[in-house]
Image (cartoon, rainbow, N blue to C red):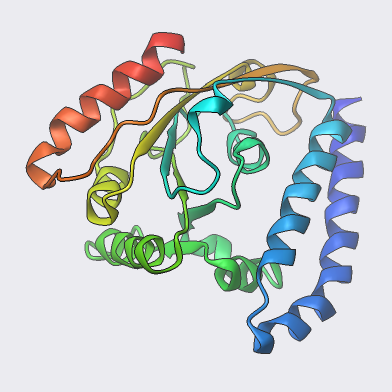
Length: 233
């Protein structure tokens, strides 16, 4: 059944991409982005139902939909990004590896709506992406989703955090919202191709302010965010 559900989902995405291609070509010169983000959230909602994923969400009262945040979550599964994109009560953007932006239609579409590519092969790639994301946060009020572990956990345990997302939060002077995800590792651990059906829990913790903070404060911010996520992980 897991294989069938995944095949149905892939067909759904293929049809969606075909239908969205002329829409993207129309919206691109006009600079119209929001409808595409709405469609993205709708697609994630459909995906959740097709895959048989039940969601329990706590702590949404900690998020002001009108504010700009850096959301930071633990990373257990390939399911995490799409689910959080759907659950976060904003049209959140993401920093993704550069290769994803080479996918026809999808890649240019993500870049158009404000997703930021990062070139991990170049030493300056991370800083360039952080600078671009910080500019978008300050100028356009965007929020970004970051997985500070950098990669999916192979054991299900929380890994050490990288600092890139914290540089972003400090540069934009935006609060950090720690997020704990539970259940996705059991449904689709790293290396598994087809997700199982089951229950997933997402917990939004209280925001951690960065106003007035500098890069010297990043180690303390890393510790606070790590402890907030680990408390429920």
